[in-house]
Length: 379
Ligand code: PLP
Image (cartoon, rainbow, N blue to C red; front, side, top):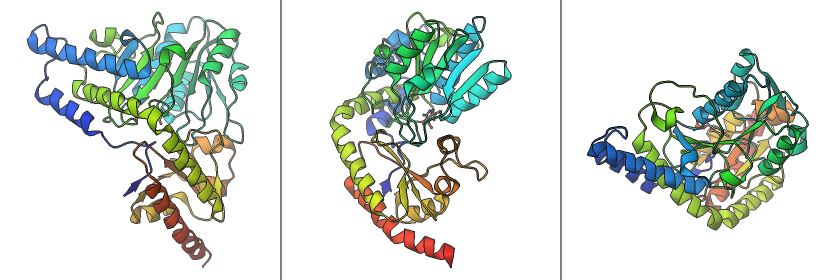
């Protein structure tokens, strides 16, 4: 099997599965209980928080566990916008954010906020200046992703942070770092952001768990109300098995990061070169994209058709666009990609487990399938 869809999700590391199992069978107390079972669970929770904070490069008191990055993004955006609503109504983001940001922004618009969606350049990049120039005195919040999940575009987060704070020192800056965590080297506390979202299942942890970094001293409002867990910011009994597994994955995946960079860059270079050799195949990702994600169009064959044809050969990729009702994704639309290119886009995404044999299997299959499917279309 050649699993090349790691931007969608990753396999669960044995150490993560084991940590979840141990929490479920041996440490099943409620971290809020005052007796020994509770204290034991509380200690496990706080150890997990230390491990994720160490991998993220922040203080453990700056970390809130959530049910995943969709919730982290929603908590960050609604929490910050509502906390700042008296200071202004303007929010700046990009047109190629993940749907969990785009969707939250749509709801904020309904609540009366003015949201500006800055589009990427036709080559898929997004210069920090384009974002900063939209920030004015009325702007309360800026949210940009670190690495785009469809194209791999890397945004210069430190520079965006510096530029927007120069325009307006009161603005809060949130970063969706889901596709950068354990891939791009960064320390959340040194990045110049106020809030930052990550997800467990993109770094070989289980699904249904994530975290929000909230810089010390920054106040936002909760979006769920009830108990005092997670300092009242995210009430509800903590999902300790998932959190313990997330921590185990963060520990192991962050250790892999530096060592696997060269390997991933070599795989990406090989994939790019060999795709470019194929007739009618065009690469949509910018040259400067993350080596973990490559988006390419196989003109003349619809994404879904090729995806399933590849699947029959044990090669797993994603359609470059999470197509909604036959329309191209908002990301490819924001790029201004032509319809034939958007409709035939595939996303290939790596992890440190990816190998040259996976790339070879993909290229060999494409070489076989392309003429067949293009011919059958004409015939
Ligand atoms: N943000 C980005 C950039 C993503 O790629 C994803 C995953 O699809 C998410 C947010 C949502 O993460 P989760 O699946 O943990 O809700």
